[in-house]
Amino acid sequence: MKYEIREIVEIAKKLTAMGVNITFENIGDPIAKGEILPAWIKEKILELAGQNSSYCYVDTQGEPATRDFLAEIINNRGGCRVTGDDIIFFNGLGDAVAKIFGFLKREARVIGPTPAYSTLSSAEASHSGYEHLTYQLDPDNNWMPDIEDLENKIKYNPTIAGILLINPDNPTGAVYPEPLLKKIVSLAEKYDLFIVCDETYAHIVYDDKDKTHLSQVINGVPGMSLRSISKEYPWPGARCGWLEVFNKEKDPEFKRYVRSLVDAKRLEVCSTSLPQMSIPPVYSDSRYMEHLTRRNVMFAQRAQEAYDIFSRTPGIKVVQPKGAFYMTILFEEGVLNNSQSLPIRDGTVKQFIEEITQNVLPDKRFIYYLLAARGICAVPLTGFCSDLEGFRITLLETDDEKRRRTWDNLVEGIAAYIAV
Image (cartoon, rainbow, N blue to C red; front, side, top):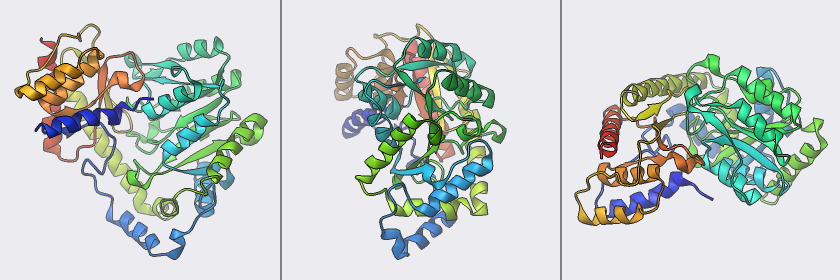
């Protein structure tokens, strides 16, 4: 089980103790990078916090009024119709992911993308006892899933029971167009599979024309979407995520599986009440759509800014993100080796880095030297269940000057490193 996004922090902490000043570009926490929750959202949360009912248990699946509210939103999109009974709340999507994979039959596999978000890939691998099964995302095709690769792996692996999607994607920022999603739904239908779609960033899509929810295209295929307020409000500390379940009545086995998720949640009584209760008053406020639009414009501008800076840099390849708030930067094939380094002035820091870079993958070696020499904490792409060499950065820094200075520093670090 690997979660490189946070594991790299342990190295950064040791370097901080040695006097290295670190800029953290690893974790997708907007609040930590300076974004402020709008005052009107805080006011609604504070109002709820003043109500005695906010301190009660809610139903095992979640607050009934909130589940009915979300079901109405799904139904208004068109496509698959649901009820409040098709919504299940969890204490963050990490809780949901653990249940999703933990209660599958041991032999049932879920094939997911590579690069992959670590929580999902590690949970699937831990469940099965084998390495995570993956299909390729193609960097030469805007990080779109390779449909031929996906079907071939499904066709020749009868243990595959489900397909995992991340849309918009983490770590690449890709957004999947409707025709591609329909092709994946058709594969699920053809091979009698269910679909799990992580839609954490569904409302962080820069161009609204590109936005397609799984519920709109899933037809009669059983499946579920993972949603959260962590990145939207943003309120990551709320640990409030939920599943939107589709077509469970159309497949008895899938229905039993979903029931096992609810039964497992019942053992915990319920998820935290207050964040769930905040959703209807926040989502239904006219200012919320304005809030989402403003953030999409902001992240689109930062994505363009990052692309302009990194696309001119020799030795790397970038694809401009269309959603979420990440960018994946690839090293061109053959650029990295295990003898490259960056100059480190402090002898103790240099010795530490030389010791921990023995027998590590080339992109991880680069990240360690970047940490020590340039004070930038990013995540190696091989930490995302990928054979490709590169790294992920965020688009979250709110201080414009600091953000550009960090990226310029990173570009200089890349140039110095690959020149060795």
